[in-house]
Image 1 (tube, helix red, strand yellow):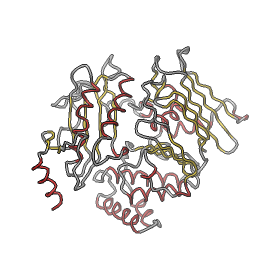
Image 2 (cartoon, helix red, strand yellow):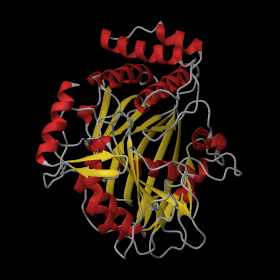
Image 3 (tube, rainbow, N blue to C red):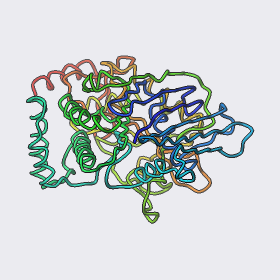
Image 4 (cartoon, rainbow, N blue to C red):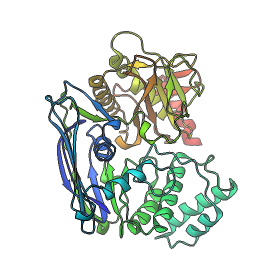
Length: 444
């Protein structure tokens, strides 16, 4: 089973996109941050799950259309979704070439079940996908006997294996990059143990992985793609360690700085459709107005309450300063800046309407691009988590997630200022402090 064609018009930031996927092998879609890679994935999710995962902007650009075709051997299913200014509802039309089951969308329903389930093969893996799993000794043994391509990749696996064995299969003590690798190994085993061919979409999956880690996953992608369709969305193809022979199609999403917002957009915060237990009140990335956030402010977390009428301007004015401070902290561990949280950790949120959310993402990306040395666009994340409050649908907690860096080099803002993160906040380094910090890092 595979996605055959995808056609998009006015969806999220994407004005127009059309592609035909290869049934197997690797299909690469490249685009800058903010160009719409995750929204493209969202258009596929929307085709399968419908309006439950969609934001509708009545004044947005229309018509918004998504046309998706799915194929398995001789069966082809078409899903056509459309919204325009004359409609009060999204119009969805489904057709199948299977005359024997003309009333049943067999392929579509199968993929819907894959999307919703927690265990077994996944349709989409992304950087923010979290694996609350243990790796069994049998699974460890499987990859210990795997024929890796070279010694560096073998050494990368050996390091993971030793960490897993020390932790008795638990992933809690592993880095985020290592957890992603282990999660992908689990996905690989799921797929090797099923007779069904299921597409695999990797959305910005690689930013926290080192070269050996990406190469290790690249080896497994090569094996998976012999049978299953693999679609990779990335900001830079140069970051991938994918064999050239495995790449069947390659296409770029055109970046449009237009202020025009589309009438339809994928709402991936929160993904309520994926929750199995309706009694679960709050997960790690769900926040309630007036409640205390589940972490304390420290060297890895910074809380900011946004005051005034221009939330975007308030965030943009300091986002590069705190990003630089986290990059320069000189310790392992991802840094997170939360706007919409008071100093004492109470969630109050940031009011952001739909047009402001798109503008905020674009301006944050532009500001972070000014940091020196240049920061890889795929290495940081800009997340908008909805804050639950009655009659306040546009209230968000804004998170900027900063990668760990142990470089001897110090990062600076576009103005040339150097900051370092402290437990009390951040500190701007004087010329003398700057020299001392560089010497200390060099000596380490």
